Image 1 (cartoon, rainbow, N blue to C red):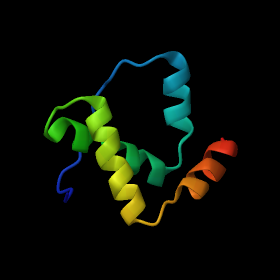
Image 2: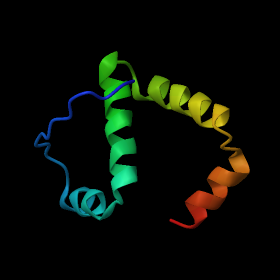
Image 3: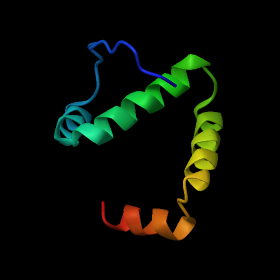
Length: 74
C-alpha cells in the first residue's frame, strides 16, 4: 500500500490506550496506521485480519520464537 496523503483524525480510545499510542516511536505509529488501513480496506472479522498479519509477519521472518521473545520484553 502506498501512502500519498496522510490525514490526522480523532478517534476515541481508552486513556491507557491513548497514553500508549502517544509514547510509541514514530515508526511504530506508522505501523499502527498501516494495520488500520489494512483492516478498513476490506472490513472483515478481526481474526481474519490477524491471520493475514500472521502470514505477512512469517514472510518477513518473524518466527514464533522471535514473537515470544518480543512479547516477554513488553
